Length: 248
Image (tube, rainbow, N blue to C red):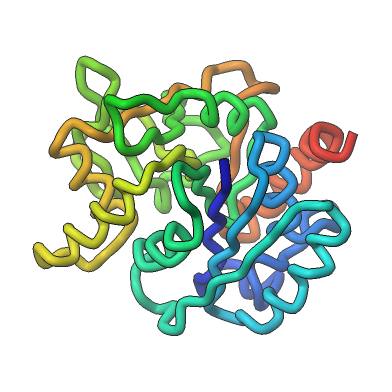
């Protein structure tokens, strides 16, 4: 299994801390390093990093990171990183032959979250999204979260930042098949802008978007979107647990 990490965006809400979100340090470690190490710990043999904003700086760091971690890392650049994140997903997926873990560069996780997600693929789905039913968790930014409404099977009925009803929140980690980039392309052809959520909804409408409940144990199922100074401060507080899991 491979992993794709999306690291192309501008990161405007973190600009007071760092001008490159993937290189923003948490406990002295760049977010992209934490993501690569967490993907490897979940079983990924290769990591594809999709770059865009500050691409040269991020790409220049990857050979050092690969040597330091012993993990194969490949960069693929999206020239127009202002486009929706679905374009980054399609670019990253083009470099892997089969199923892959999909992660965002600004998300960090308790180790069991990704390890559990990596094991739940199946022929009945084109993608499986890690979801958290603790929608009022203080680690979640409700103004920036992507919400999920599940159906009676636990599959996705609706997904988006502004859906009127929801029962879970998107954790920013996916076990994807090659159906996902095809779904994003299909959504674009139907007039959608090309976000990852557009592709997810396209699959959901066809009963192909499953979920994986990450659980409720506070130590084993925490996750964070490190997207602004408040979240960065919270991440620094979580860092000792995370670093002990991935560095030993």
